[in-house]
Image (cartoon, rainbow, N blue to C red; front, side, top):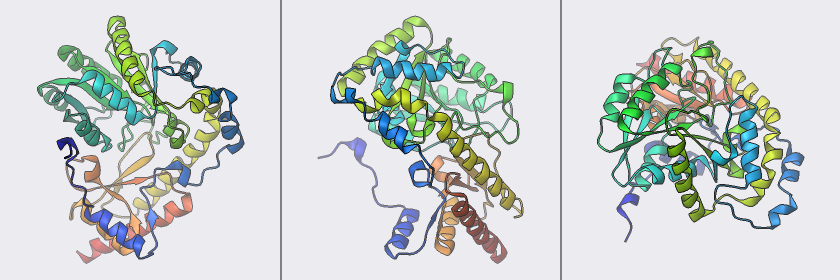
Length: 399
């Protein structure tokens, strides 16, 4: 009765089953995977947000496939304020970054074609690929300070039959490293040689804590006006304003004029088919983007405080390490591979009531990784980290 693309195994994994049982029993829980900012105690400028959403123009429906021009101008101005030139005509508004990916998958790939995605990375791509009947080929990320992408791994992935586009995430999720200029040289060679498009996800781009000073001039910067390849750059309010419920993202198309113009014409037809972006948030967009400094200042302070606490505490435990990062909302804890990542996560949840993500959720190549969010309130975060480290120390002592 159902399509084969939805034939997923819907039974809960062991970690979800344990989490559900603890919640059903009313046992305490510290969630170090919480990435919903509206649940993390930030103080939003409520009056300004609600006032912006109360525009009377929202009572009139005037569908515009690419998004209302005033909203696209607001996005273009946001880029201009960061020194990036993006024309409103090159933008397509979507209901989310996930929908932006869906539009681009439909634009670029036929059923059975292949998209190149990084590993490790956020697990969204696997599900999107299945829903849109495309395959994925993973390329590895690099530990080299001058690169984020392993060139040989990318070349192998690109050799996969039917490769149509490459996805990069800058900064990576959960790796927290920004794309490098040297990476762009490799990407240009691979994509141009195989006539592939480039999709660049920059949703965490504003959250730069670069504690090691590893970025600087080596970074590629935003690709929203990248001229050399057919490029689609993604961003949105979910991370930029820490307001995922407002459901607005966008695609900035750039590259050689004939290709980008053709892509935008086709994207307009796809967007017109759904008309999914709601009118109130489009009318509110200019006013909402003006709140960006006030909101991001809070989030950045939280990220820096929690990451500093994490690194301070982890440094006192032999055999553990916080993997260096430059930005984003998550951190990776390197743990002994004496047991699987899932076993570590299960033990920490069972003993201490603390939830952390095992590395395999993000397609890490081997064991020895836990991923945690930096967004929880500092007191909750510190207690959760202390409990997690206590469990790990205890397990190591018992071994």
